[in-house]
Each structure stands twice: as C-alpha cells, then as structure tokens.
Image (cartoon, rainbow, N blue to C red; front, side, top):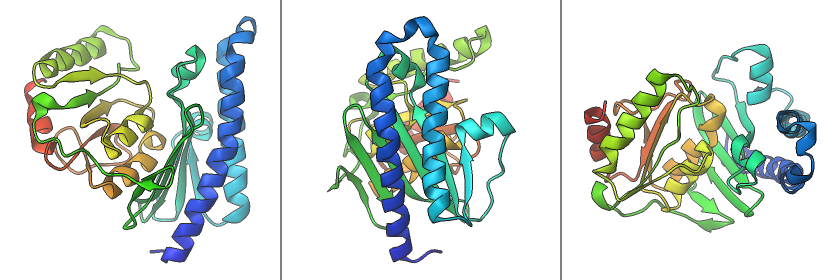
Length: 270
C-alpha cells in the first residue's frame, strides 16, 4: 500500500487533472447550443477524447509506472484488465447525454485503484463547480468540507436514484420499469440524474439515500465514487447484497442503515 504522503500527492494530481478537463467541458457545455449543425455526436466525442487525453498525459507524466483504464481508450482498444498495479480509472465526461442537452449534471471521474481496491477518488462537476474528493481511510470531502451519508433509516422516507437502461430492447426496458414500479411503492421518490458518478456522490453527501444501477459503461463510472461513498460512511455493494465488484457493471449504494432494506426491495422487484 502506498504511504499517506504519496496518496495525498496522487489525489492532488488527480484534482489538477480534473480541473483542467473541467475547463474543456465547461467551454463545450456552453458552446453546445451554437454547434448543433455540426452534429452533436462529433462534439461529444471530441470533448471526451480531449479530456481523457489531457488527464492521461498529466498523470502519465507524473507517474510513468502506473497503469491506465479510460472509457475512450477502452472503447477503442477493447477491455483492459484490472491488475494489482496502481491503476488510474477515468471517465472524462460522465453524463454525456446531459452534456448534449445542456443539463448541468456532467462530471469528470478519476479513481485510483491499488491492489484492485479503490483508494483515491476525485469527481468534479465543472458546471456547478462541485469537487468531491476522498482518500481511503482519510474521509470524504465536497469542496474541501467533510461530508457524510444521510442518517435516514426507513426506505419509505428515502430518495432513490437509478438510471434508464442503455440498452433499449423490450426485455431491458421491461426489466427496468418493472423494478422501478415495484420500488416506487417503497421509497419517497425517484431521481434519474443521468450520471452514475454524480449519483454515488449524492449518496456520499446525503442528498440521496439509496441508489442502484446495472449495465452501465464500466469501472470508470464507479471507481472514484466507491471510495468517496465509503469514506463518507456509506456502503457500496452488488444489487444482490454481495460484495461490490468494480468490474461487474452492477452497483448499489446507501447509508449503512438502508442496505438490507434496499437489497430486499430489489430482490422482490425482480
């Protein structure tokens, strides 16, 4: 395990990279409206690639021996296996659809795993200027102030976040809407913010009480958020209640009081 000094240094480097990428996103976010005739897909891809390149170049220069997994590179090169080596796992723009529509839930997510364990997490939303940070064993912070998960103990008074499935076949949609239909009887209300990383940070700072998602992009959506939630006193787990697996494309999270109730509700909602 790296010592505390180097972990603090890793975090500071990730924050620098996230802020720099945030400038590109902020610029693109407010320009989107003017370049629609060029095709939004191209614009998004350009922003994604520019941000990922910037982040990786920044971190590779500082830590040439570290490994890197990113949404854009992985999309281009096929899946990258997670090893025990220090590995930076990056989603340059989480909430791409939000970015396209000018909906302000867009963020940069940078996580560092050491021995496959999420150890440093940085999530930065440049539009509303919120920076979530955590180091394993050192607590979680929003814009430098300590955060913790909610103290909610009842599912019925809890705010739930999830997302619409990325696959739009009938089976996926029905599975998702049936689950939501069942859960809506058991929670206060539902949010779909369009960013998995922002949902996890919402749990960490107590804005949300429970969340789950399945079939999202990959480890880059959850690597940073997992550290931030745990350091804020929350729990990250599989929808079945089993241990969280960063590579599984399945995640659930809550404060410690609500885990069992959420797992039960999800089981009944199958």
